[in-house]
Image (cartoon, rainbow, N blue to C red; front, side):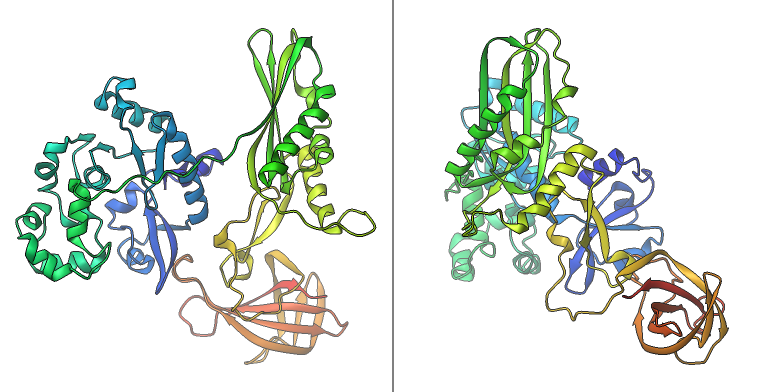
Length: 499
């Protein structure tokens, strides 16, 4: 939610603080709440609840779709950023990080000072955090989510500090937590008082996360649970150290791009983002960035992206150091080129997008992307051409294909019906000051409102594919039905045109 709010604030479209807002994701029985702001939580909306239930208690609730893929990528970047405090970090679930600070806390004056610095630095990023330090992963996880603020625990204090916490702090699944509640074991302290032999008999065959005995051993340190820290991505960087200051880095750009592409080829990667930095003799640093629509390691193409952009750098008194770094890389496999030595045709469009984005700006070039919605105007959105398509916008291949017009009108244009029939499209209507007569039609295709997003009272639509006397094919729909209790007489609109 905080990441979504920061993005809306950058776009100057952030909702007011008193407006309840939730981010929804697809669930087995309709959309469920993935995250909620403070106003929504005060109104009774909580994570995991169905959106329809939350709307019943809070009609003013605003629902947006969560970017699950973007959140995961942001958390992975935050995990690498957190290695300023210790070398071993890993992602813990959907919204957590685990840091092995053994031997690193003294560099910041102790555990208390380290937690304060973490909290302050994360707040500067616009993120709130619940922090805790403990000798084990399980104890730190429990104290961070159910313990006091900035909790600190020693090896001999684990049992005492975990005792008042609920059994949910042991990272158990829902069925096991429900079973323990029925047995009257609601806290970790009550679970610790049960004889170990009794727990072993009951949960001997249960695996994690359904075995409270194993979770207790992990939390208390009887069972090791080391941090599996992923290796950081390789740093692809080329450096040009100059003997004396110069005013124009263009002469060194080709060599830097060749060096970058050589390193990318050795690592089997392709570049999606480049950052050129020049270090002035007076201590100032200037940079120019470029991005690509597809991963590449072609030096000539990367060098061309900086054409006309290096002039923006103020040389000042000159600079004596130039660096070129690949900020974002992706795996790129070698493919066989054509036998005649010509370039592959499917690479021309990404290169054109790269050049246009470099000249006009990343936001000026967009591409359509599909969204999971059966409402036509919501089934497609515009994304920056250089952005990676999120997984949430992918449409299932199992969905039956539906014929849609090549051009959609935004917004749909209302027509005036001259002669209507009870069923089917109107026989004659006026559109754009022209009287059209329907000669053939197909349909209807009924599209109901999305109740989790549309306001109450939104009317359903019946779509027809019609052909007029001139052979022009239109996508016509009727909004509402007679006596549906949601307004007056139905209205007709033209929503698109077929070839």
